[in-house]
Amino acid sequence: MTQSNKAAKWKRLVNYTIDIIGYLIICLVLGYILGFVLAITGNDDFLESATFDVLSQLVALIVLFAYYFFFELLAAATPGKLITGTRVISRQGDTLDAGTIALRNLIRFIPFEPFSFLFSEGWHDKWSKTTVVDK
Image 1 (cartoon, rainbow, N blue to C red):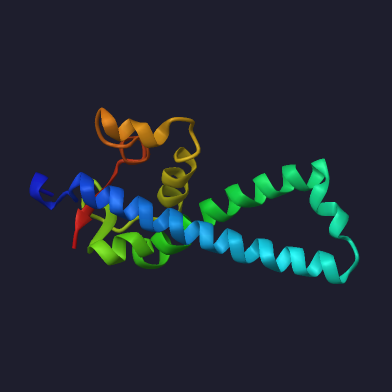
Image 2: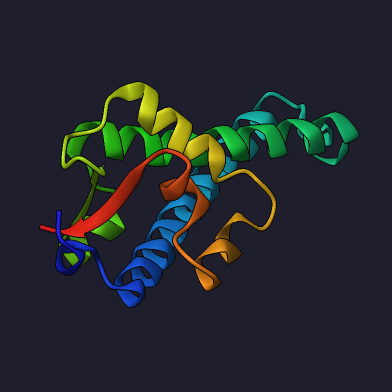
């Protein structure tokens, strides 16, 4: 892979923005469904409990992981990458296996990981030995 194949940082930012919007839409839909189910079952007071706060944060993390994992496993690209014409591959140019995709996406949960792009490549690329390239 040559340096010219690497996706530009502005494309990476667009990918991230589109994917966060997609993730938030999924969370919003799930929240409405949950609220509706709790309301019709008479358990809507659960929405104000501390247990709900913890569970909602856990579900949000699971949804974020699943979003990236599902799309990268199926198409080597999230909706953001599909729109910008990029995809994720190994540094050797191969399609990623499920383990590498899982590692790549777990690394995203490290605090301040998004800021790693300010100094070099993102940690989720560096530590999983992956890169995002133009198609």
